[in-house]
Length: 244
Ligand code: IPE
Ligand code: IPE
Ligand code: MG
Image (cartoon, rainbow, N blue to C red):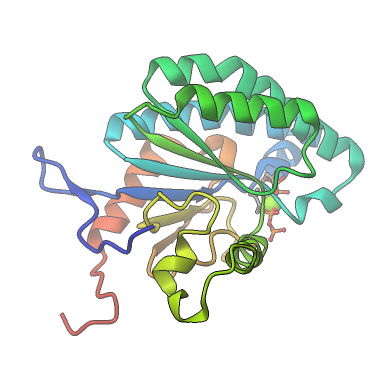
């Protein structure tokens, strides 16, 4: 993983910058459903439908890396029926979408623990990652059973397991041991659903990200809402700690 201040892509059309790596905390499925008198499972269903729409749109906009927070290490503590519903939905979506994503040149990566996933979900994820590994289009990071703290602890354990000499451990060596270490740091982190917090997402990779919070619930966040997030990104002056 590299810290690259010049990473974002300037479009020739209007001289605006497309963030190179966007991460999204897809929050608000439950409230979206509740406000419509629907079951929470309907909210997750609508959320997964939006996910498919957003992936295609972001690829068209020229975003190179997109990481989506789909299920956190803390989300296991929700009611069993909700968790099971999300797991089933995830299996169905990956099984259904992987081929289409592959045809569109999308490269899929998984960020998160695999040991707690059902064999079926683990299998679908691994197949999708394997099938798309040589694609050169959008890199799509799926954060599932993901926690930023767990990722950092896991990296530390791997360094120790490998017997890494103390003097060899620096930030770049450490970053090589994160889940998707070939993805660059996040340029723009979007959180939908109206809350202003990180909720254990990409703690390492967002050290110098621009943050954008939207009131819109995830199933409704697309099109003009993405325009607004990108416009806001373009108004930011990134300094990376320097006097510029
Ligand atoms: C985000 O939507 C999806 C997951 C956490 C899996 P929520 O289900 O958290 O929606 P709200 O925050 O309850 O509205
Ligand atoms: C963050 O949303 C996790 C995902 C979107 C997958 P949460 O709904 O779990 O976060 P909190 O509980 O509001 O912090
Ligand atoms: Mg939530």
